[in-house]
Structure formats: structure tokens, C-alpha cells
Amino acid sequence: MNRLILAGGGHAHLHVLKSLARKRWPDVEVVLLTPYTRQIYSGMVPGWMAGHYALDQCAASLHQLSSAAGVSLQLASLTAINADTRTLETSAGTMLDYDVLSVDTGANVDVSCLAASGVRSLSVRPLEQFVVDWCSLLEAARQQGRWRLAVVGGGAAGVELALAAQYRLAKEIGHTNVSVTVVSGSPLLPGHGIRIREHVSTCLGERGIAVVKARAAGSPNGLLLDDGTALEVDAVIAATGVQPPAWLRRSGLALAMDGFIAVGEGQQSTSHSNVFAGGDIASRVDHPHAKSGVYAVRSGPVLANNLQRALQGQSPLPYTPQRRSLYLLATGPKDAILSWNGLTARAGWIWRWKNWIDQRFMRQYRLNTPSARGEQHGAS
Image 1 (cartoon, rainbow, N blue to C red):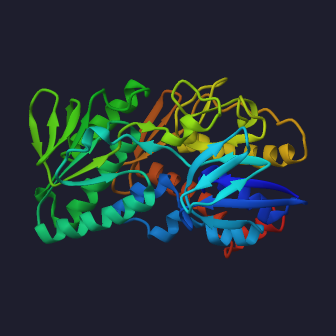
Image 2 (cartoon, helix red, strand yellow):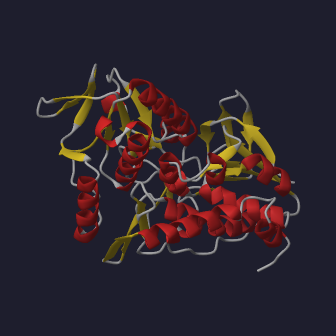
Image 3 (spheres, rainbow, N blue to C red):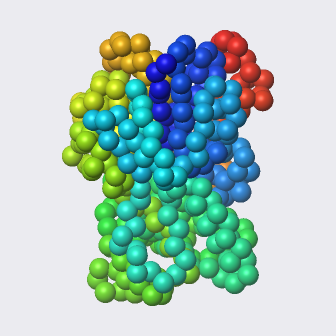
């Protein structure tokens, strides 16, 4: 019997689990290695922060999915891979061997510049810790009655988090008692078109969110900007760039220029044919693209097909990531900004569309819902 290890419970692996729940693969032992019993969908986190969703609506139960799929769930983190000996180590101190390995553990947030901050600090990853920290921040803000927040990072994640935080804090303690600042060393939304940047800038201005173009480092009272200005805040959210985990450098796997696992056709490692990767831990060297949840979700069906083919000794099927992505940025209230191939708009109907897409995506992984039961039994 071959052993397949799914390292990480990311968005791509959700689809692999769903595929196995629909139909088991013969003569294959499957192990899911993850430190968490659920996978929180990052696309709905700003809506949860704003108070539009309960957390359960934003999470898929890895325990239920694994049970339905006949997959052994091991609650531990991946700490080392030896791709040449086909073994890996876990945070529980165990060593596992594999015939085929798929990695979807996500990436780390680079918070090194904020290490000296003496105030409450929240990193957007891992999401399990972030939701705990956000709830704690809300309670502290309620007790204090006033709150100053800085979000470091001007990408899509930083913008959405800043808008969601301002909206929720204003509801909790009053608009005039909240100060939110986005600190970014580069222009907002790098890589996006000028029209969506204009929409975002307008929206931030309407909400009273200041934007400071500067690099920031942690300081005892908040942040120290690169021009010497001290920014005193009560808390900092780090939405800075991602970095690969340290253990990747010792894995023996070929790595891309950014330090993540180099993958090509079908999300297969460029150095080891029995290793696949999806989500932020992987970088397509043949078709580079941004690290976004959109691509992680789209790679799920590809991984499901190609992992089964690899276990049967077959070559992977090719997969070319889409060149353009639809971006729907939540703005705090039930309002959102759309960006698609140069087209931008901002409206309440865009949020309703985003909500419909997100809710539909999550329903397919709730095994006790009629739609999920239908999909498991082959319904279209």
C-alpha cells in the first residue's frame, strides 16, 4: 500500500479531501498532517472581523473531512523534509515516510522588522492565532474606550484588514475614538492598476484611515518610521510580505528564486517527481503568479488529479494558472471594490456577489449540508 502525506490543511488540500470523501483511492494510505482541526478561509476573515460572519461560517472542519475521506489526521506541524530519503519530521517528534508528498502549509509573515515593538502585535498568519489575538484586541479596545491601530503593509490584505478593523472598532467604541493608520514602504496595492488604487485611496480617506508611505520598525510605544518619526499606537497588525519556512532550505527540494518550492506542470516539484505543492508554499517557475488565495483554490482540483496519477505511476496532467484574477476587496461595511482586467467599481452589490461566492465555496466543505451531501454522492 502506498502512503500519501498531505502536509498542511490549506485551501488546495481541502479539495483533495473532498475528492477522497467522494471516492476513496484504492491501495493508498492517506495522512493529513496539520496543527489545526479546521481551515479558516482567509477570504472571509475581513468579513468576520467586521462582524458580518460567525467564525464557524469561515472555517472547514478538517476533522470531519478527514473522517469522511478515510484519512488519518495527525495534529502536528511539519518541521523538516528529506526529499531524498522520502521522510519528514513533525513537531510531535515523529518521523514519517511517504511514497508521494503534497505540501500546502502556507507561508510565514515576515515580522522581523517589528520584533522590538512594545505594544500588542498581531500577525495575519497563522490565522488561528490571528483570530484569538483580534478578539483580545477588541476586548481591550472596549475597556479602554479609545484605540490607535497601525496596519503595516499596503497590499490587498493590509487594506482589507485596515478597513475591517476601522469599521468594527468604530461600531464598538465610536468613530471619533478610533485611529487607524496604514504604513507601507511602497505605494498601495503594488501590482494593481491605477483605477483600483484610486478607489482604495478614496475609500480609506472616507473612513478616516491615514496612509503613511514609510518603512517601519518596532519601537517601545509602537512604530519608528524610517524618517525618524515615532508613531505611537496601541496595537500593530503585520500584513507584511511572506517568507518561506526555514526548514525548506534543508529539504533537498529545488527552490524558486523567492525561496519557496519550485513547481512546474501540474504543481509537481521540479526536482522530485513524487512531491507536489500548492498554495503560498509553492512558486510556479514556468508561469509565475502572485501569492493569492485565488490560485491556491484553483490548484486544488489539479492536485487531486495529479496526486492520484502519481500514486499510479502516471505523469501529471498539465495545468496553466490563469493570467488574470478577479479581486473583490471588502471595505468594512457590506460594500466592496471590484477589479478585473482594468475594470473597477465599488458598490454594495459587489459585496453581495463576494458574499455569495464565499458562502458557496465554504458550503462544499460542510458535510452536513444538503449541497455537500449531494456533491459527495456525485450530484452535479
